[in-house]
Image (cartoon, rainbow, N blue to C red; front, top):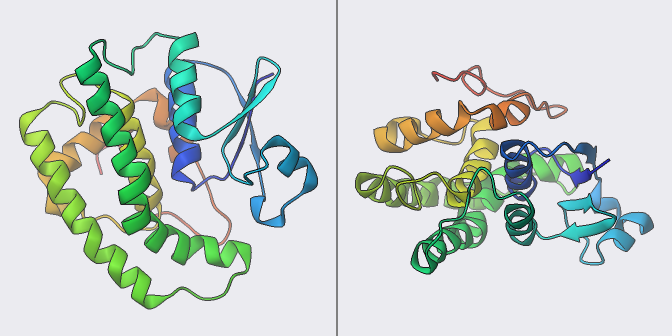
Length: 221
């Protein structure tokens, strides 16, 4: 049985879960308390990070590498475009959300509000929350600009770029940290992608001590 070691609100884990579900690859989900640095966990990934996918007898860390591996072993449905230029654009946007967006928004909001409490690292840093709340506005505006020119973030076909962005936004939406009224384009995009069957597991997540808002699992907001 394939197995994914994950944390429910981690956008990197959610990204892999979405790709697995979209490609209908069955997997057992195992929550990993990565902060405890369990020796078995460190043997699976010495970098001490999730997600880790066990598949075909081996352990695979790093979300982007996992997703591109899954694209190669299960090419249907297609999540990476065919031309080098289009693949570059999808990879560029994946890096944008997993690096820039994560550092400026996700880490300042989800990690401060949720992860610190779960891992026992103290109270949220209000200055970081303020910085994250400010930064997300600029990212929403950038996404609005992209979606003004394209049907999806990376082009006219849904791609790994959309699942990467949606993984981050679903984590933020769980704690009501997205102003969906700022951009009708972005709201419509998220409504489309969270209506996909692949999103059902994500929308069913429950994190101890944190309840999602009523609209979180509502496909019509």
